[in-house]
Length: 117
Image (cartoon, rainbow, N blue to C red; front, side, top):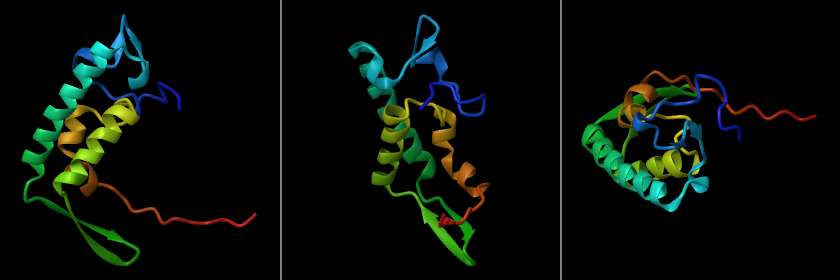
């Protein structure tokens, strides 16, 4: 996966926690000290996400049905882990993660179409 996949995918993190000397790196490429900073930041983000998403839900229309989406604590931890460690913060900024309910509410369902060639 490219480190930069266009302006819409290169999310902005304050203090550039994924960059060293102006060069963006994957989480696994960073020195241990920087990984520890990201781990601590992840804990803070999870706390903020849980506080913001507590008792919130989003209704989505998909395949002719209304889906009622809630945000359980364990799911929030998985999202934060995948976003910050596995994807190295490329697709969601801190603010986007904390307000993921607003992003989800504006999303559009795209059906899974299987093509046989």
